[in-house]
Length: 461
Image (cartoon, rainbow, N blue to C red; front, side):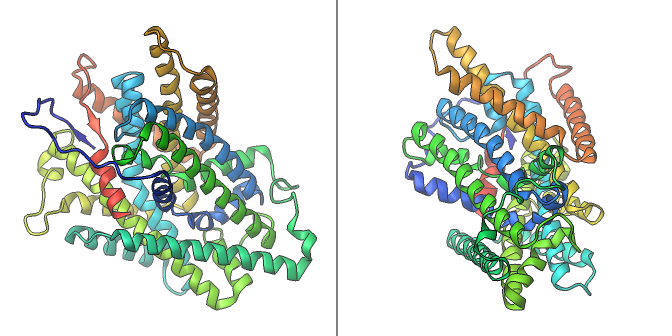
């Protein structure tokens, strides 16, 4: 994210090469989502829903499909590297776009905290004699040190990590099915209780869906690859929908089979429930493999998220939105924004005082705000185009995004009350910042571009 100076270039700028196919974009999007996270927060969602985790993921998937359609429409309308901020700015209003960008900033700053918290919870379950705060602090120190010295996760390593995650997920599902067959017989594999039961309710499932949406974060990240994609107007909408569909199918299948093994929403340790289930279905050996897959995935994600958040703060400091002397400096030795990296690490210390449910809800506040306004941006784009004499499909450009906006706004209200309070406070700060930058809303806000931070995340992730 940076503020771009409005200077006319004197020389042609180099352009990105369009080489990515549909399959390449889909694989990248799935890797970015970190599919194993469905097991990372399984216990949290199961507790909130009363044992109806698959139902929560089904509701979340429906919401994401409507929103994915809107992201696809915007990616086709503006085939450049973009984000929720840029879509809202172009289609609705620059000031509304700025506030949406400010809400998305919430994700950048606090996503590392959530990642470290989940990883720490599972390591704590594996090594109960070690205080949980040591694992969180260890994550923070390790990723902060690596980001300062500029270590990057190579693309091949990312694919290996993705393959390992898929292997762990496949083993988890297979062992879960085997456990159910052994203990209850074939008919037990076909049950409606994981979707609705005596302890579940519509309110609980809705609240669970609001948390489960955390697993989908990143399906929209592929929009940043638009300028490198072959025929992006056609490829990008398809890729976004496929990523949401495939990711959602994985989440629902994993949640369903896991719930068959461990019905209900009561666990000895809700934050690491999947680890106890892994021990039940596969013993200590598979438990160790599961922990390794989850923790490695969380470590790589935390490394990428902190890199992106730090570059975001650096760009804002460099361009004067934040104090330049603090945030806008680069280390001469490491050539990285050391102060910004340390600050993002310090923000992660908040994890010592939060649980997984509250922290994921906090992240989802920014996500649902962005999703809601992307849906509204499609409708605004339709109206602008109609006034210009260009007509688009009413179903795709009005009905679908309207439903998506309503669902996203509804799920936003189902988040943890503390997360909503913190999120609204954050937006209030954004209004103050906007008022300062626009001299009392008299001038257009600065053009915020998330590409720099997003590229850091995409390269590291």
